[in-house]
Length: 321
Image (tube, rainbow, N blue to C red; front, side, top):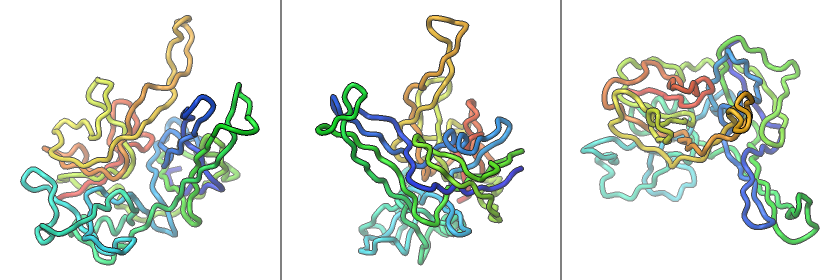
């Protein structure tokens, strides 16, 4: 049945591809957070269900990436306590009038913020005593010996495996919409190394993730998105909506691949699995302003031609300025 689930890894999670860095050397990259395809595999998601996420869960609070257009006045404090958001004026993003000429530091994308705090902050444009959280995970590098002819050498060379370890008490939060039953044992696996994870049903009463906003002027990207320009196989950092985008702020895309079934070049009756060509995924935290009518009237993953929204990609939280 429809519900929220916390996914808690029991150890380090390895997600990424082997990158050669020499004749007998390589590095397994560590991509984080897990994308919708990887989470669907972890949940053994039925084809008639829809996934939202990933979000972050601690205690009973939902956290998301702090949007990119957030700044603070330069301060020695390691974690900002007072934050502000930029606004679109005179065809560019600008700081608040009272901060013109002052030294600022862009902190968007570097921290997590609670959902209720985000609602208040985005409406007022400033937040005192902001309860921000540093990303609750760390990347570990596990050095190994190099390999030669598919065998591990005793010495020389270098082979590194990078994994992600989440802080105690934190979980990945997802919502499954549809007729879903979690594993009987509540255990599953995530990542290339098959890290055991616990899948726990949780009660989420906050409705801001799906709040209605019929007159939205913009949106914040809460989950990573895969968007392309029309029928062209070109990744773009903004949603291809009919009314167009007036302005946006987004991080540089990150590489993304998935498996796809295609016809075998030697036997047209046979289908084989291949990795898709390089696509670029826009990380969470991007901010968009609509040129015309918003493509949604309710916060949710934005539907696309490839049905990626079914796996949680491109969740937009709408706002009205």
